[in-house]
Length: 404
Image: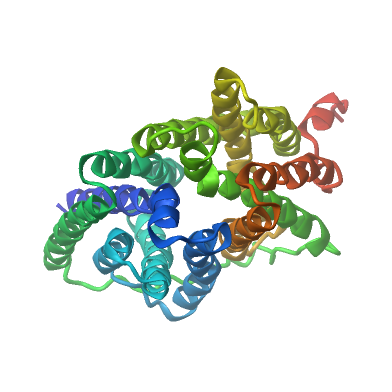
């Protein structure tokens, strides 16, 4: 009975991750409509997404650190409710400051959700299958992130920008369902679970970091930040680029393009993680980052077919580096897995969010979005160059060493 209840709770958390990540890319999709309706500059439009990304990503590691020290975790259903309501109501707001407030509020829901959900996953998943369960949890969020734009695009095609507010329904239904299940779970398991403390046996030695550990770890985080800057910049402004640029697509078609792009990114994460285990993390990190460069350039091709090819394959290569960069940072910071994850998943994404506003400012200065977006090829090129200098063991060289 207890195992069945735990599995139901895990199912709820996975579904909740899927639901809350549906709302993350919606802001980028509605930017063209907000620009036209509120007469926003590219900088002010990009600042909406920046406020969301920075609030969510930068605060997330601090929320996790506080929870690790105190044992406090936010209510997962409440987080889902806040995140979904905040994003959905942005479609109804005609006031710019209220838009920023709603984006920041939704971001708080996202920031509180992930540490709480990951804690539940850790406690309830079987130790032997913890990696498998975590991979399902991560993939569920990526799939939700991918289908968010097309759901919003369908609603916009039916009823215009205000119709996006109907996205509030799955968030409310999902939060209610999770809340009822959580109450049932507590009733079936009334005994509180003791607080976990790290156990260290006499034979275990404390993990020691290498001297100047911050140099290679900082280099990986820098690469993650540059990659996030380029990738989030493209995701943020791609709908605007396709709708208001010379391509002249309607919002629904642009949402389909973004959704397919994000699914290519999901595939890149899966393939990149598998290939890094087999052929080496540093090797595949360099290959993935370098492979993204030519396809990034194709995004700005006047040939429609080449442009779509560039969008999809760039997303594949850029996302393939996601898992391996997180794992490399965790390896370089032994004993500080949470801190390492916060740097790569939180700080770097926050930097990418700030970069979206910078690109908007550049577009305003240059009088056009396309050349400003093309400037993102600079951090795209810097990434594989910097990756060459990371002091991290090469698996290919280890295989060539003769056995003792």
